[in-house]
Image 1 (cartoon, rainbow over the protein chains, first blue to last red):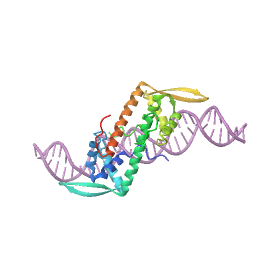
Image 2 (image 1 turned 120 degrees about the horizontal axis):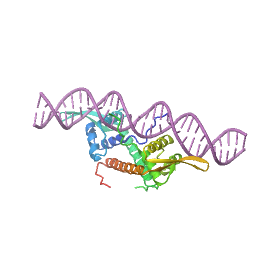
Image 3 (image 1 turned 45 degrees about the vertical axis):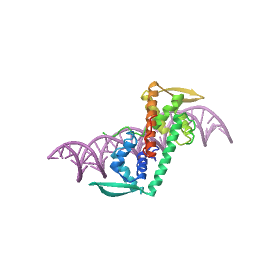
Image 4 (image 1 turned 90 degrees about the horizontal axis):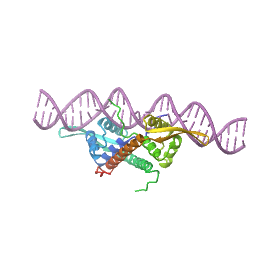
Length: 114
Length: 114
DNA sequence: ACGACATACCTTGGACGACGAGGTATAGGC
DNA sequence: GCCTATACCTCGTCGTCCAAGGTATGTCGT
C-alpha cells in the first residue's frame, strides 16, 4: 500500500515538542516563537500548529489546560513523558537525516561525528 | 489559494542535482548511489527518482541522451547551466533551513551567518 | 534451452503533511 | 465605535513522496 511516513515530514512536530520541553506554551505563542527563534526562516502558520497540537495531545504526547492570563483565555500545553520520548526519537532521526544529506552534498564522504 | 511550495520539500531533487554535478549518471545508478552515499539513511526509490528526472529535464535543468553500455540501454543525464543554478539555490536553501532547525533545537540562540 | 535474477526504464493511485484562507471571540488603544 | 492584536479553530486544496506494479533485455547456471 502506498502512503508511507514521508522521510522529510514532521519538522513542525519536532519544533513544537522542542519548545514545549522548556516550558509550557500556548499555540499562538508557539507560532511566533518559531518565527523568532529561527530568524524568520521557519514560517509555520497557525494552520499547521493547531492541528499538530491536537494530534499530539490525542496521542498522549501533550497535555493541555485552560488558563486565563491578563484577561486572555489560553490553552497551555505541556509535554508528557511519552511526548519527551517522541521528541528524542524525532530529534535523533532529524540529526541522522541532516547528516546524511550533508554527507551527500559534501561528495559522499563520511561525516565525522561531532 | 492554498498549495504552497512546501518548505521541507525538494530533497530528492537536491540530491539528484548534486550527484549529477559530478558526472553524468542514469536513473537506476542514481537510486543506488543515494543509498550508498548516505549509508542507507536515504532510501529514495525509483518511484521518486524517475519523476524527478523527467520534471528537471522538462524544466531545462537536465539534458538526457541514450547510451548503450555493455549491451544495456541507459538514459544518461547531465546538468545544464540552469540546473547548476538551481542546485546552488536549493543547496543554499537547505543549508539555511537546516541551520534554522538546529538553532531551534539548540534552544533558540542565534546562529551566525555562514 | 530455459528459468531465475539483475539491470534498467517507466506510470499509476493514493496517503499524508503542510498551507492559506477564512471564521469566531475578546481586549485594548484611539 | 472601530481597528488592531491576541487567541483559538477548521476546511479544502495541493504538492510531494511512495510502494506497487508493469515492460524489456542481458547474464548466468544448469
